[in-house]
Amino acid sequence: MRYFAIPSFTEGLVRINLRGRERDGIVDIEDYQRTCEEVIAEVSRATSPLTGKSIVADCFMMRAEDPFDPAGPPADISFRWSDTTQALDHPTAGLIGPVPYNRAGEHDGTGFALFNGAGITRGDLGTRPGLDLVATLQAMLGRDPVNPSAGVSILEIK
Image (tube, rainbow, N blue to C red; front, side):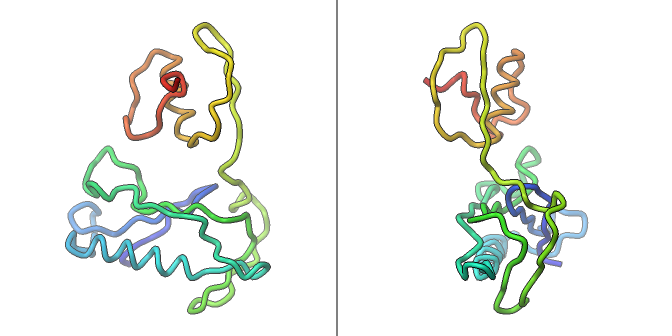
């Protein structure tokens, strides 16, 4: 298997089975970029059977700078879905689903957080990535970030 899905509640996460990083890796580093592009192209062909529109809102390569970085995120590619769906239609794989909403993807990436305390000023900071919540909680506890690439504390945003 050249790549595989990583379980997730909100986005689609894919990890490349990279030689030298995975125990039984089969994709050479020279083929890493091409393999990522292949995955993105293939997943982007999937559509919602209800709307006919692509299920992919956007995607990005999370480990493009250094796929071997041991502190990097678990996935190589992250897909943000255009909508919550129970099924998808793919020109090669066909109709997949429907699946029941049993915590198998009914979550989405939206939410909110309210903070109150010393040094926190009132305001709306707009839409922030979910990882910023982790970085913010670490900052509030006076701890250094576990992974500096995993979000930015909203306490640092002016």
